[in-house]
Length: 227
Ligand code: E4P
Image 1 (cartoon, rainbow, N blue to C red):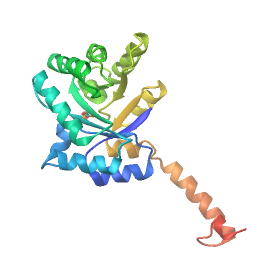
Image 2: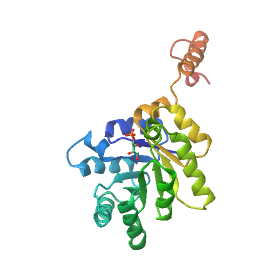
Image 3: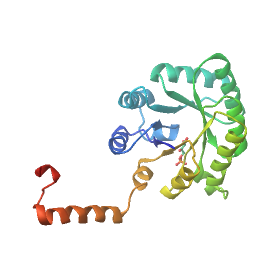
Image 4: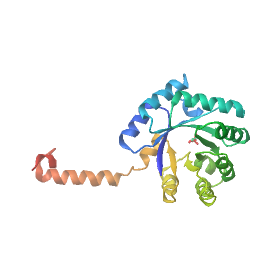
């Protein structure tokens, strides 16, 4: 399961990338609104930091298919390889996906997914990823984890190459549940990323090991001080 960061604050992205294995960054218009200004200033800085090998997902915001296609080309032209254009999984979006698949090589992520059927249609339209919104689905009175698992199963049973990139999490337990069933990818806010391995038992175990070592070796001593 690939781990991506769902955020556009460069300093936050850098902090998470320093400590964790990160496959890329996802953004959406709401996330970009938190930064403001020219969105490409923000996105180009993120791309420069990530390099070409990591994924960057950027959403098109036009309402009609032809404009979505234009936006997709513009986004990839400015942000380069490994940029996935996020396209809402709805009729105009499906039309745009079909045009992109017929006419170009631009990879795209079907987004705003609340139902398995949206993901299935997007997959048939050639989406590289489908992004179910786990927590938002829960808030509607349905089960977001079940929807994400169903989508994964639909892709497998129908021999589709589309991958699930589950999004919208409120806790690390939701992430663990999807990890157990082999979901392809999740995108997480920095807070949830840090919460994946946040446990005072781990910290105190490590502290006891260090202080036990120092009790016979001396303060601040490590294995480097011995031959
Ligand atoms: C991802 O594609 C979505 O834009 C995002 O993860 C939604 O998360 P939220 O429900 O926390 O806003």
